[in-house]
Image (cartoon, rainbow, N blue to C red):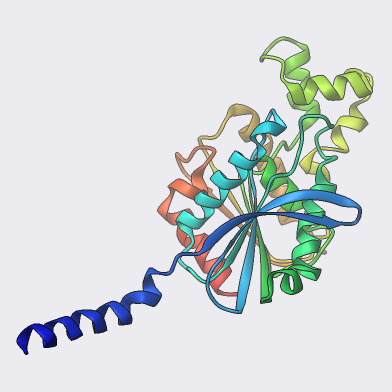
Length: 276
């Protein structure tokens, strides 16, 4: 009799704890929007109503590594998110065979699919939509914020801020040449010959007209190229008169991944999402 009671008690405990043990399911899904076909990585918790967080990775040199980058940035954001009830969507936007900035159409297609099709295709009701981006992903979500309204945007160490400055350093041999500037040079010539083409793709061009509240996180011990233009970008964004709420968080001693490493940045991230 005592054994039976013990067994019943254990079964009852296991039953009570079962919901807490349920894991969100991560899957890869092909989507099409605005004639753009791409893959998304989707992690859906249990439930039928939820908010969504779309996350955009940093620069990937080879498109063969996109899915790995999308999964990694999902893990990074999931690791600092204090909620377990959000749909998380990793956006493996391409870049290998295009000029920096042209991949905005892929970033946009993912957002519009989540806004307009995901609820029906995933069999859920999506309430709020947030965007999160790291490095070039931060560049993309900042640009998206000039195009479409969401419930909020988080950009960690966004960039590149100033492609004229960056590519001039490469042209003069002060830093090693890279794929981004090489492709721009092949298309437009040098920065001295065609500076406007470089600046048109720089994040310093997108500091106005933010349609949603946005949180910027920047480590103050980031690379010299990033820190050269951060004060200028910060001032131009702060001066915006047609933007929604802007929050700038600087992390003393923080490096490029400060959002994921700093307890201050993590708290700001969660406060931003939970207050909207």
